[in-house]
Amino acid sequence: MAHETMTMTRTFHAPRAAVWAAWTEAEQLKAWWGPHHFSNAEVSVDLRVGGIQRIDMRGPDGASYPLASTYREIRAPERLVLLNRVMEDVTGNALFEVLTTVTFAEDRGRTTLTVVEEVMSAHEGAARHLAGMEAGMDQSLERLGAHLGSLVLAVPDDEPILWMARIFDAPRDLVWQALTDPKHAVHWWGQRAAKNVVFEMDSRPGGKWRVHQQYPDGQVFKFKGEVREVEAPHRIVQTFGMEDMFEDKVIVETVTLTDIGNGRTLYKVVSRFENFDDRAGMIMSGMSYGAQEMLNRLDEYVRTL
Image 1 (cartoon, rainbow, N blue to C red):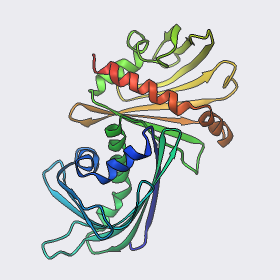
Image 2 (cartoon, rainbow, N blue to C red; image 1 turned 180 degrees about the horizontal axis):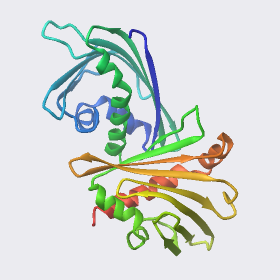
Image 3 (cartoon, helix red, strand yellow; image 1 turned 180 degrees about the vertical axis):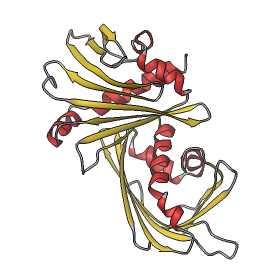
């Protein structure tokens, strides 16, 4: 297990200073650290090289998972390096040690976070915990997104997809209604500055949807797609297109809603492109900024239902 390495990159619609603060302030760490269904009883931060960060993470069964981390490098607000000693026993021995390097890169109000975790040592009994390390960090970063009021964007290197996640403080059934019922969706779909002059949505397999949005300058953007699969209230697969822009491209979106407890819902959409160039073109169009605003509107709307 020693020297196994995991790398994870996520983009948040939040300034770098805010993301840095969320990683380095005890009360903020307490709010988001750990997988879904976990909480943090105690968190302390001594932010200096050689200082210790302590997190007493509690599982849904009440079990304690203590983490003690020594700051190896601090370069605010660009880079953190910590040596994590995980699940120390009563004699002070760690079950395993992980060197974590976190870098923060800012671009036009967004922050791209890269987390590299290298297993430095692992003792007997650590295997099952290490097997869940990647999923645990993934869920922690989803919770960080919710804490920051941001979507979480990932762009994998190995296939032409991009995915976005957002946690809503609303039950899954309500989020599903807001997503699939046109009488609800018309209230949040699209940009605040635009008016939906055409809004049609048939959320059944084979059903079609189209939205025409008009901006104050008179410009109209025309979106359209077809529903392929529906598993209420969990999953919907549909195509996404834009007239005069992505009309000849096949973009398939898979939306999943997961109940993560306490009346919260994890929304995740995976968009699959025909090739990497098409994906790059979508990203360059500024789609994540539009998605951030639209998901903010959805978050506001589901709170009213």
